[in-house]
Image (cartoon, rainbow, N blue to C red; front, side, top):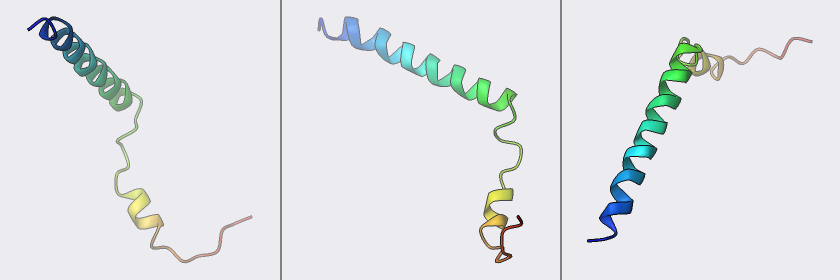
Length: 49
């Protein structure tokens, strides 16, 4: 039972940290072009120098 006193706040802290990381990534444009990489991998053009 004493372990819950440490595990519950740790879980809440890690969940909040994940939420903050997700909000930071979404505000900085990390999720704007989700289809671009999927289309670029199918392109067989040689790289431009």
